[in-house]
Length: 304
Ligand code: NAD
Figure 1 (cartoon, helix red, strand yellow):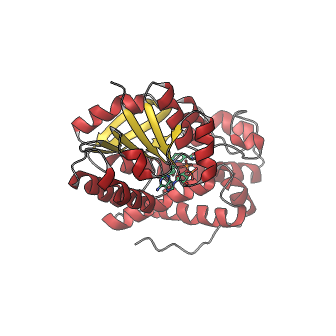
Figure 2: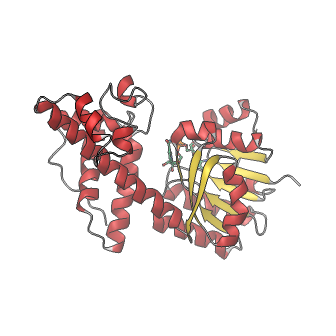
């Protein structure tokens, strides 16, 4: 029997992910309160309902792809009384570890197995079904969710129990945010020392400085023709989303008493950058603020 998936949140990520589930043969019933998102999903051939509660009534799986933890908790509170008994709840949004565990508990207390399954790969990965899923779930919920996630992605990693997927996501993205700043400082210093960007790239990309921020998403135009720097930092992973993930990491660090000076400093630099440049350009554009010297010093954010 074809499984029915209620898909809540048909935005930049959720719209194409829901489309890939439908292509894989699932019956998808979508909901999004923003008419433009709902209309785009309808135009793409999805069945869209007027409410989240209507979407979950017949669903075997309830999948959410929402902006924040508050949205997930509110949505769960709204839909749980209407969900089919025992249906699987999978949240793919990037949210705080504590809120992910709270949402999972709400669903578990109502008798539903749950997974947190945030993604990396961005809109391009959502469209091409090449996302990586980081999953926090017990073994049986992971086994139940895997075929569904494999229809939307290329890699599905079981990271541990509830909240472990979100923990993996924010730790990875904190490493990425810090490493992009490190790579950018390397290029800025090279330029001031009269060393060409290409020469630094030729050395560092095959030496101990190599990393994804340098080798794939190089923040200066030229050395990696596909990096967003070659198109004025359009496309790619938006600086505003990097700031969101750094804030989640800083909040999680504060909650567990981990002192992470570079994670905190990266949060402050990205906050200053987003205030100056806006949230929309690729996060590698932070090099322009570092080069201009306008980002530091910033007032540390309160994270607790
Ligand atoms: P988006 O704002 O484009 O889409 C979110 C959608 O959720 C919106 O259309 C909104 O109307 C809808 N929504 C809000 N409340 C709802 C509810 N109660 N029921 C149904 N729909 C509701 O955001 P996005 O870029 O698709 O990102 C979604 C999540 O994925 C975020 O948590 C984000 O951090 C994460 N993420 C995004 C990217 C990316 O590159 N965009 C990459 C990785 C992870």
